[in-house]
Image (cartoon, rainbow, N blue to C red):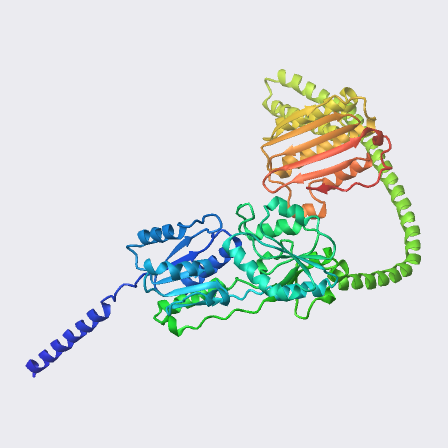
Length: 614
């Protein structure tokens, strides 16, 4: 039984390996296809540029296999001679001798002519796809069975009829074209279509003039004239032109309205017309090419019929030549239209009018109330002024009382305590025999010394005697030095001598502001450095106290409270000054107080100036 089972298992394993190997074997690599795209002119020309881009995008996005696309330009408007085509044919034969072209695409009629007549010697038997070719161009061409393509329908008569409809007074038609083979072919077609109008209209064909003379001729056209522009790859002097740029120059110089036949002339000065398009020619030609590359025979592919021309007009040119829009045929497309102010903002204007009407009613209703509010506001302002005066007087009386107490403490109790200390020191010097007395006297001395310092500190806080003895600048400097010696914060200062500029009361207020600012720094800022600046700037005194500490918390900013800021603000307001605080978290705080000297003497009468935050 084991002998039978083992061969079965072995066979199953072999079969599995064969299946895996077969599934993992890569197929043949994708075949690269080769497509030649031949233009009669330069692909930098606007129309051919669009056609080329549409063809390349559609072909590459729709092909499952890699595709190499070779582009050739005959540039016939600039290079043409009896031997040109023969040389061009030999050039292509030599260049593509080692290449196997799968499909040749001819863009415009001259390219198709070359591929049919000379291309069979270069690319024998390969399928041909054409685009941008009118059916009339195929009538005299022995098109091979391997050719298919996209037709374009060029018509000139409908645009002439349209121009006559919009300008019924017209008596003369000027047809402008170039002298290249393509230009000549189109103007001959136009002549044939215009033949039936020659009994009623005078036709002038301007083809052989150099561009300067042509523009001069167009600038002096008689009234009741309409200009029709076909194409111009080359003027009468043989100078090459881009038809779109020529259209722009012709329309700018013409003293009569200019109509065209190609939609890509829109926006370059023509009024409009029934315009044919080459916009989708490249896309449709690429679709035919993809079908041939996929294996479809060209004989099985019918020609792609052209779309009918569209009635397109330039709104700016209609206004220039005073053509009403209501005279345009139904279905007309008007481009570059600039809406009037009423058309753009009609509903907004209506809404504004309604809003203004309602607003007026509200204003009328509020006028009486406004009068009452004005009287109430005046009364409130008078009350506020009175309150400010009262606040200033109260602070002034407080300073007077503090000055009196300071004098008593310094000159009275301070002197008495100094005598106690002196006597206790003398007793200590002669008390060598009594240990107990010595201990008591030492305690008296220390206690008296401490009491003196405390009393003097109280006196200094109530009324700094340096203000009266040395003036504001020296008093502030002394205070900074004392605080710097007592705490770990390193203080620096820059103080102008402003002694005598302010009254005694005003100096006291400034001194208290500095004192409060230093107190904030040593108690709350966690700073290592601080600086005080006091400057006399023209008719202003500017005080700045800044540190490198932790800044002021958001809650304090929102309420204006904390760290004595309310007191500083009130003192500044009392002198008619301003107080600003610039503080950022972790970047310190800058307190700035500005006083106008002319306002200081009117302290208590200035409008309230709250703290401003940056």
